[in-house]
Image (tube, rainbow, N blue to C red; front, side, top):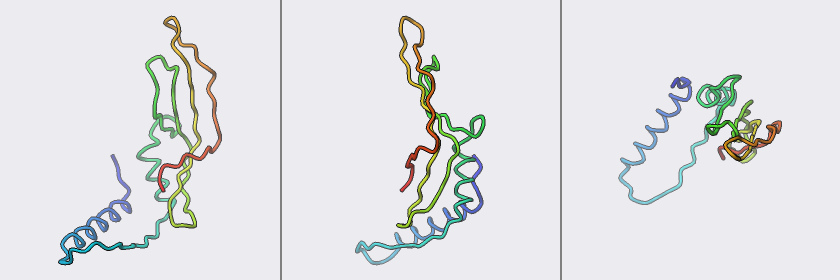
Length: 121
């Protein structure tokens, strides 16, 4: 799995900060706020490369053996909130059906455009 160089550097910096905190002589717990500025386009690209790897840049989260039930995400968008959190939204396509008498009785697929699916934050 390919990792974006920016995310690799960010992980290394976070690991270093955690190591320094663990090695600190003080045994008291304190909250530490580390402000990070992220280029959301890079985060969105990394998400697409690592999760949305299916055909047409889709992420198939679930499908059964009869292809009667399925859950697929597409068109991921990453944005920042006023409180400093990340919001990830995506289009969602869901197909729900039942196996009746050995045959799948499926509803036609439904698609919601940019239905918010909060993954982080």
